[in-house]
Length: 201
Ligand code: MN3
Image (cartoon, rainbow, N blue to C red; front, side, top):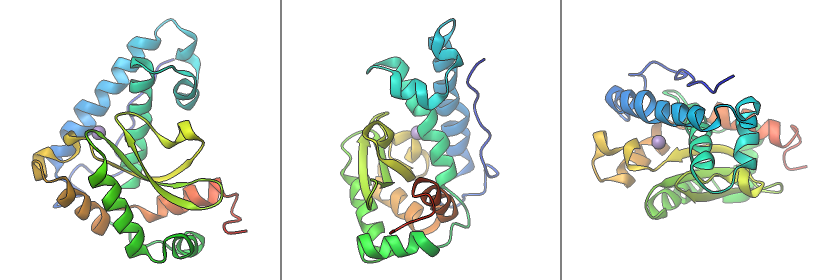
């Protein structure tokens, strides 16, 4: 068994003008693909080859196995966190956003600050910590699952996510994502799953 690169959940040009097809060509077709192929090289002939990706991540010490496995997971989650028609949060998630942040606008401010404030490569996340929603940032390949938090959405802030389209202007890339591309249906599905559909209860 080996780990595989999932297809993008949308056509390569679907996120334009905010994220170009050229960025996705590299980000999915080169970077994500490379994490998958390196992971497969690292687990070849080892018990991890037959484990789930999450089990590999949670069981790996700091180092190449963790980094590549986590980056495979982080990127698949990121593609699903993006959508050309993400809309606004609805239902139980919308209620939780209002309770825990005050408004969707405030949540987006916190995500923008986390994304801008991550020094060097990493990720900004909306998570469920078991009792409330929270915004967190992680460095390099690190991810909230390691801390027992349940991710609902993420934003890649590695330079390869935005350098073709925005050069060094990370906040501009993040603003375009926050205002146009967040897949709230994906976040709602994750929220229902991790809260057992009993949000706020
Ligand atoms: Mn990336």
